[in-house]
Amino acid sequence: MPDGVAIYQPIENSNDFIFLEVNKHAEIITNTTNKELIGCTLLQKFPNMINSPLLKALLKVRETGESLYLPPFYYKDKEREGWRENNIYKLPSGEIVAIFTDVTEVFQISEKLKNKNLDLEKAKEKAEESEARLLESQAATKLGSWKTDLSNLNVVWSKEIFNIF
Image (tube, rainbow, N blue to C red; front, side, top):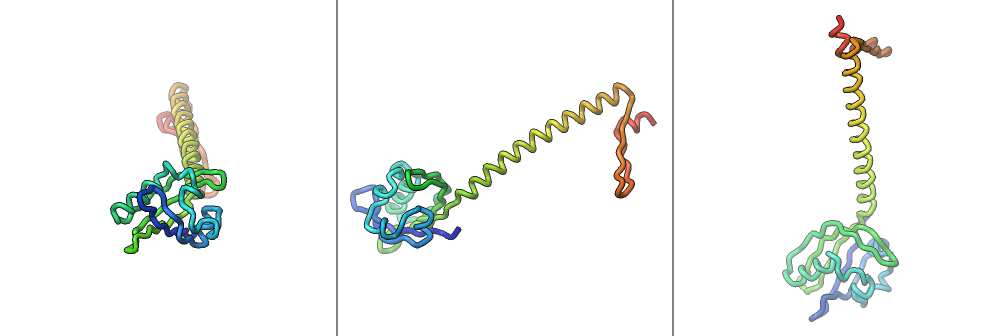
């Protein structure tokens, strides 16, 4: 998804920021409109931002003037929820610009992949345990096994077959 852009005016002697402008993608990501945001403060429209890393990052950029990358963080309120990644800059005019991306889908896919990976690791462990038991059984009984790939007539023997012959 394309990036959202929000331009804020810091409020003197306050830990809040007034929305000056947002682009269309910011409207989509935040599930709101430019008209609803302009002139309002961040905490008026996004009350759960009070303890968020975004508010802390905006304050830091306001104070230091240094650009800041904010890794993805999770936000949720009645209107919206999701993971957002931000790059924040201070303009010479003192305005703060946040360029942000909705990375919720990436996080969801990542979680699914982590779960699949755990499932595969468990299946691999079970297969290795099963193979070890098979090898122990073949050694104890002096029996072996083999398989033939009929597409190329390749024959694979178990370790115990080699010991028998």
